[in-house]
Image: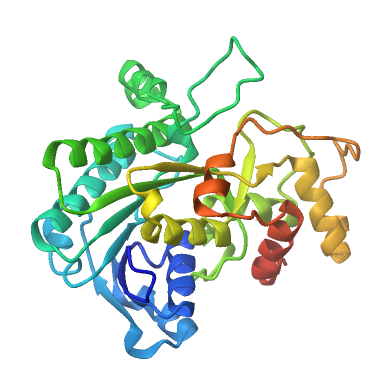
Length: 340
């Protein structure tokens, strides 16, 4: 892969992660095309980036249809597929999450395969949800990129519309990533595939958020510490690991450009987090918000343990992870205007 500035397509460019990938690419001299559901929502990014002709947005109304991407993929060197549903309040696990995630991924890959011979690599944003297969027999199990969480989809098939929303989301990420690798195996496209599997993503929100209710799921978790909706601090639960959104963006770009990243999946984790560690980081960086933090459950001596081996992302992609304290502080800085 060339290391010189190129042109990239980002699906879901107005999203939390998509906006950061775009910003970092533009800062490195790339040209960026982003897909959006409507141009009005993209206006914020045009005004924020001030990149002129190097940043353009095109509409892709239905991401489950390859025709939506047919023109967007033409003439670019790499594609970042970020767009995918991320919410837990569902009525039907298949219609709300699983089918859109799978169909959106395969539609994008098919559009590249059929219309864009210039594309050298596609990077798909998956999730650590696709790795976190339960291991109740071993509470000290350490997860690597070799792991797949097929159990979630089995639970969806058993429980149907009664399945918890979070299980449906986990299943959607696992099945969409499975579909991506299967597409490459079956169609033998000219482009290479790489996949990014981030854990909970914190860090500054640079995408358009008009009100607190529009905050993405992980940033809203931090906001809950500031708005009084969190009554107490809980100890670390299983699979609570964080990564900063700026490291996620950097990892995507490295996965798109480094030869050794082709055909690989990468778990991104900066380490563990817990309610106590988030609250302590907020109290340290923004003492003016201390009285808004939960009054109960504080454990100043809590040492949280991670379940994830992040050595592959460090070694291959060269990610030097941003600390939890900085990530939380910068998250608060970007959303503090919503605190009443």
